[in-house]
Image 1: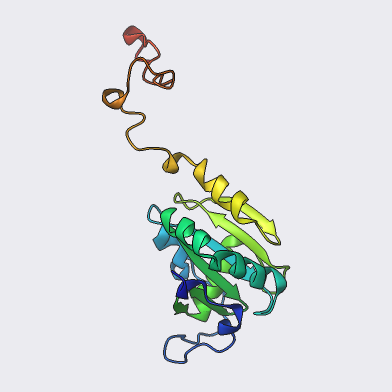
Image 2 (image 1 turned 90 degrees about the horizontal axis):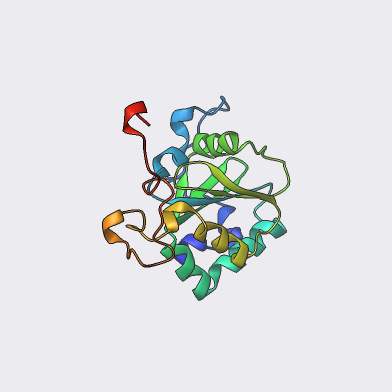
Length: 181
């Protein structure tokens, strides 16, 4: 995980074999790598106007600490960094078309102020901030998401009937079978 959170300076010169160049055409929906993350990971996307942007540098510093790296991994997150037509997913360079597709999907122009976006496993943007998001806020937001709740907590067979949290507002409401409700 640490290598995926490499310093911003590493964005300056992509490996020519790993980064493909494409024409300046508009990004295709098929080129958007975030679509492949759906229901698998929680992308944290940082779009910055330059590799030395203070927000990008600070976010990567925050994510470099061992505790935050562990929290990032535990929450099944991946890091996307987009600077102009250069982009990386953790350690892997993406094509210029993929970089444009990410910016387009996140509605952030290449010269806009640095923007940090948290994308949920469902593919929706859960947080969007121009500037730094502190680790406590980032991880706290994720921990409130439904997919971070203990699995089986909505399964009536896994509940302790005496526990105050055992009430399920959907399954414990009486239904009128005559009306098909």
